[in-house]
Length: 168
Image (cartoon, rainbow, N blue to C red; front, side, top):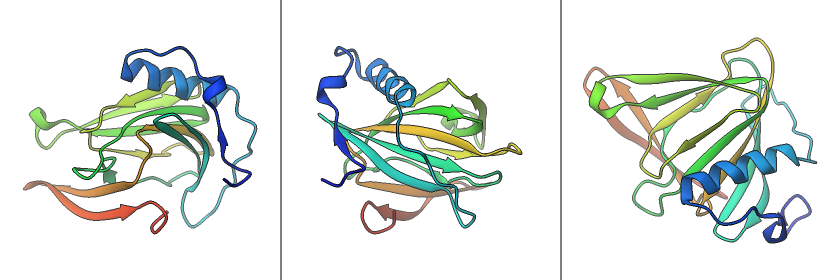
């Protein structure tokens, strides 16, 4: 285990239903963060900062204009649910709304807010503000892959699969 990752089982809040537990973990870790993020011009910066029983947490730093493609958290291989806590700044989450084709729900997230997505959600995050943002993401189980998607007038189509340890 490297020095930037620590096991956190003694810090965990009591067990709760999955979505509530993820939300609690993300808010707790974000409030007790000790690692300082780095901002990079090429793309958002990400580092795994915590691992615990059945989950892991990543710290991300976003300059204005940086974001993700639409993606899920593992597809059919090993899907993961997630909670995203905005530590500072503002991010905008775009969530695919299957019943409202070709709709994307746009939701601004300010510092202190947490968004929870289940293991089937396709979404993207972007810093549309003029200031840097920092977020903490908790995945359960730990994130092994992400599948990106293209969305156009014909619908949602899988694009690429990114694997932990290879693509980030």
